[in-house]
Image (cartoon, rainbow, N blue to C red; front, side):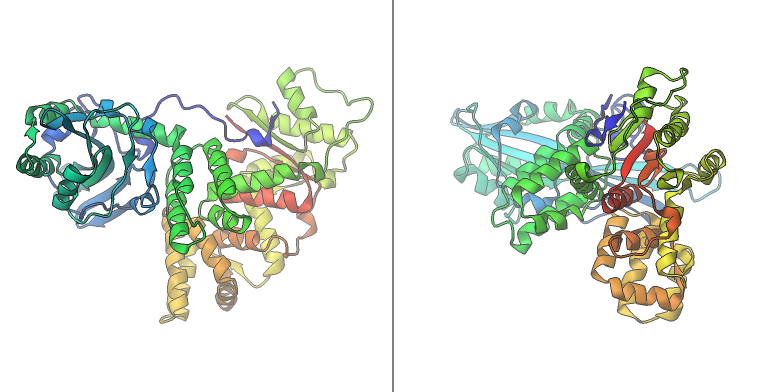
Length: 546
């Protein structure tokens, strides 16, 4: 302590579980919970009746109601199917034949291997029709199925995705005579039905089929363990999947190629990928694309936008205000530990102090303010942004000349200075006002839809609204002017969009910015604060929990 800003995001994960994807995925492959020992392909022989899957299709992460049922769709895949079209080859190290089983041979030489992996989960929770009834739950797994053919099973395996064949029959028949050393895949929910069709085709082609081997493989297959492995990949190697995608995107400036990257990067935002992996993803993007495309791609995911903002801030660190300690350093209360003293006295212009709950972080903030003032910094040049009004009031009570407020208040003050006629309102009120004032307006309809997504906190809702306002800024402001209303969510996006142009009131202007409980602020608030620091060349000192 202090931790430099370029170290933000480094974290360790103790275990990798299905709850990474959804907290409702209870159980650990034992006797209880949704993912119990009985949930395996051998006893889950059913098709999905809720969604028409087709072959080689994906679903989005979402939740919806259907009568008494609440359906939760939980994707597990790292790269969406549409984007996978751009992945032409998979390095041999990523094809693990130990998780596959031999299901057929031909003339004792050519061998067919089969493997599978859960691709997404559909959870259906059915409410009881009577007050005394209980909620029933049903889980459907959609799998990626893999078929691999090779005569000698060499160690150096070339694996190729083939996703353009129309049907299962064409898929397997095309594989057998033509594609040695190739990995073919398809999606399904009923493994046994799909394999039965494969057996018929293989037998017709003169193969000896080992049904018992496949049945043993499926009987021993642990869905829980496989989902844990996928969870681990998301949290440790997702950047490798993105790098593979970008590497294989030839003619990257073609719109259909870029749309594959856009979809993949947008998909990442639906789960809590560690920020240090986003740094690697951001590095991959900058290695593959020109600056204008990098900027566009980073806007598809707030975590990438954060990584980009952090990178730019670190590159310009030498231009930021830096605390200068006097020849005779101010005295520090001896009650502080060595680590706390390092934090209080740091001259780094960008620093993050991390500590556990109850470790004295708020005391360190107060001591940091006192130390800066003792070093000659005017209290009026210091702004402290807290997460709660109570914390901000506490700073003001002890340091009345220091600017102290929540980050939401700071943004509201800036917004109000530029739009004095906009009253702060709620998302529901804005949505209702749009219905009244713009009943048949296509733009208002699109705006209302984005606002509804914000209200429901849908996937990527802030990212999508940020993109919508950037593309339709004048139209959005015209609507808000007519309504005379705004919301906290719209304020921060609009202030971010126009950060270089907006007038700022004196009470938010400073040279030294301190952010307390930084982990409690939204990612968009954090991005805005970093952009604000970059704009004003301020010193930034942040305090947060481990």
